[in-house]
Image (cartoon, rainbow, N blue to C red):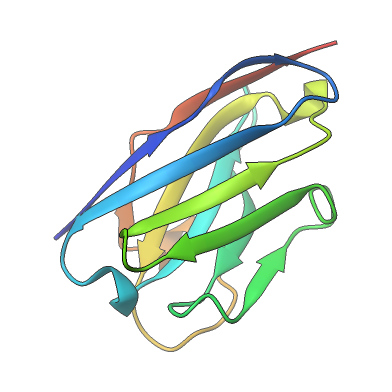
Length: 125
């Protein structure tokens, strides 16, 4: 089992920045590739970024590319999502997720084995 706990969400204004953290415990963190998802009210969950086990490979969807950065610190068992130039449309609950296996960009949430409880990000205009 891997337990994931997100933190760092909050209420910010458009153009501001936030850094989300996802702390993992349980099994060896570096065995897992990590992803960030978000779900806005009345919308489906959306994949936004992924990072492989070592941090050497990352992927972003177009809507966040150039504004968000995913990173990880395996010594701290933590994955991060640095969010810059936030927009009101970034408002959502943000979730981190972990998956084992061969690295590939997994946009489907069903590919992930473990999920955090989510952290709310609200961006006002």
